Image (cartoon, rainbow, N blue to C red):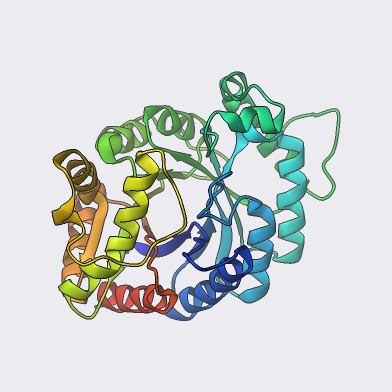
Length: 327
C-alpha cells in the first residue's frame, strides 16, 4: 500500500516573519503526525524571501521536538553546498536526539541562485561533479563501511535512513547504483518522471541497506471542502511558482480568485505542465487524482507539497487528503 508523507518548505506568508513560519511548521508537523503521515521532510532553500528552511538541520530539530513518532528529515540536503563530514555530524546529532526517526535525502542542485556559491565561498559547479563520491563518503561516515582517516562523532553508527533525490536521470541512476531509495521531484519537474523511475528500477543493485527498489514521488496536493475552495486556496501556490520562475520570488501571497484565467499563455502553460503531478480539489477529486498518479508511477510513497496562505487551510488539507486516500 502506498503511504503518504509531507514536504514542507516552511513558507513565510505575506505579513509574517521567520518566527511565524517556524512556529507553523511545528504545528503542521503535529497535524501530519496525528493524521497518520509517515514522514515530514523539510527542503533546503537559500536566499529566498518566502522560505524559512535554509538552516535545514536546525529546522528538523525543531520539528522533532514538536512531534514524537513521525519520521523527520531533509527533502533534501543539497550536498554540494556542504561537506560530508559536517552533514554526518549534523544528522548524527539529530539521530541522537530523535533515534530511529531521521531521514536524510540528498540532492545535487544548489537550492538557490548562482550567487550562493560566492556566499558559501564554494565553486558549486565543481562541487556538484564530486556529488557521487561525497554521497559514498557520507554514507561511510555514518555506517563505517569504508576505512576513513577520521571518525564523525556524532555520526558513526547513527541509524539515519539515506535517500537519493532527483529530477532527472542522473539521480535515478546513482540511486540504483548505490542501492538507495529514490525520491523524484515530480511536483516541480515532471518531464523526466517516467524515464527516471524506469531507469532506477531497471538498473537497481541491491545493497546492504535496501534489497529492492523503493520509490517516492512528489505531488502538489491541496484538498478543500469543494473543488472551487481548493482552486482558490491553490492560487497562492500558483502565484508563488510563477513569480519564482519569473525571477521575482517573494513571500507567499493571499489567494486570488480566477488567477490562472488572468495569466498570459506562457505563464498559464508553465502551470499546466505541473498539473501532471498535482491534485487540487474536493476529497473525491484528490483521491482520484492521487490514485491515477500512483497507478502511473507505482510509487511506494507519495510526498505531498503545496502551501496555502491560511495555515489552517493547509492543516485541513492534510487531514482531508489522508482521509480521502484511506477510503
